[in-house]
Amino acid sequence: MNSMLRKSVLGIAGLAFTGGVFAGPIAAHADARPIEGKPVAVAVQADKPDSTKLIPHGVQGAQSKIDLNDEQTANAKAIIAATKKAGLPERAAVISIATSLQESKLENLGHLGDRNDHDSLGLFQQRPSSGWGTPEQITNPEYATLAFEKGLKQVDGWQDMPLTEAAQTVQVSAYPDAYAQWEQQAADIVAHHWNS
Image 1 (tube, rainbow, N blue to C red):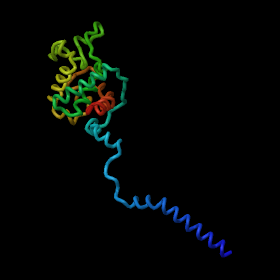
Image 2 (image 1 turned 90 degrees about the vertical axis):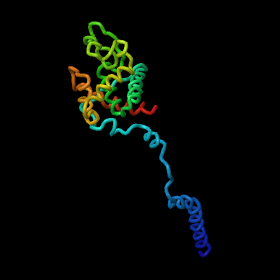
Image 3 (image 1 turned 45 degrees about the horizontal axis):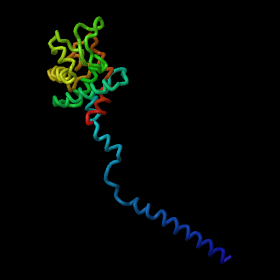
Image 4 (image 1 turned 30 degrees about the vertical axis):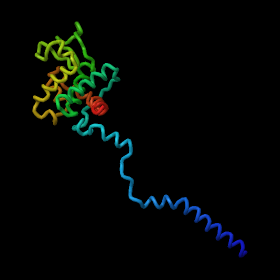
């Protein structure tokens, strides 16, 4: 019995030692100070614009979304580039893209014949007869964006307005509330492409 007790004690001691060898280094690191740095996913998120800057009031109403083709994506990128060129913040790009999504689905539209709203053209459906520029100018994505954003900058407090109010003040649309439905997609586009 003495021999059996001795084997049991040695066996338990062996298990404790083995467990200590494996658990020891882990336990030793558990007390160490935390590793400095961020996970990769957090570092990537830091490169994206702050969502409170993109949608400061939250989205209003039901949201619409369309799949973008290469041309539409290129037009969205052109709007972002023009916004940066104008020295305006991400919010201006969100308003501009949402406006273009409503007006043309980010397609640089030429004259649509009988389906045309008067002489409306381009990404923002701007009208040469209303002083937006020549047909060649307003079908140029950079020019059209800068013209829209020039109008936006003339709206007192546009940065603090709901998107649909800011867009409508510039566009004077027959459907003033329609811009709001594109806010989430516009913010997603800006978040994805602003720093690319």
